[in-house]
Image (cartoon, rainbow, N blue to C red; front, side, top):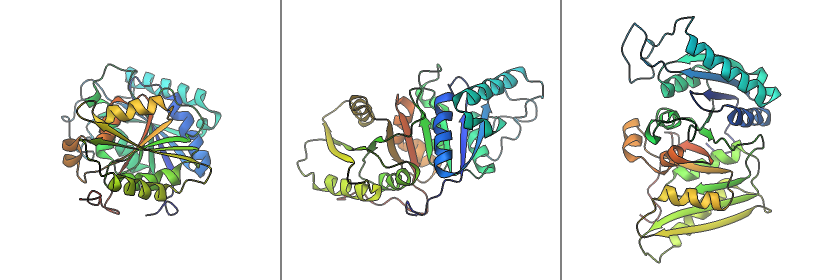
Length: 303
């Protein structure tokens, strides 16, 4: 599916415990206005223990046992906080419908996305807001379970749509798919950073630059956009995702774009690829685009 064929008609704004919803709400409203899309807000509430009626389930289809009592005080307070943040974020956010989704947060959010036939999930990053470890942040769980693009918005986000983008250019097809989605979702960028983190001391950069060309073609940036191509070389540390985040902070990047390869949940969990690492530690907003069956990942360039 090309950028021209992609449509964003329904956007799910997801709220989770301990995260500031306001920056994500502002960006979700701006995107809804841009695409004339319907906006629904799902407030995920995960009780400390399951309520009677079943044990914790691993399948998004099987966790119907998470049923909160009508007078559950914690769930009610979390819902009220989300509504206040939503109303304060942007006047247009008041038109969003709101639902309380009870269950393990990633599963509750992905279930809500299916029920509302969402084309995009927008949620706040939990980095810096909670004491959760990187591996247990809900945005990572959502990325593992969903096949939809996921926009995780940092606390530094604004209502302005991002125009300074960094593409984490691994040598597989997923980042080209991500460029298609970014082109359809966002306004024309003013600055584009195509960044590849190379290991070893290979002097043959031709395959990398050929891949940069494919990403730039998919993005179709206007002539007045500044496109910077950069190969970061490392012999050991830092890990690729750390190098990408350091580069993003140095250049004032507003959004990091990454493709998520690995077709199955097991593959994505095992690979722990760059996209998931960026979600786990990013202090900058991140758009993660999974490669779906509609466009399977291709072998690495030059392989």
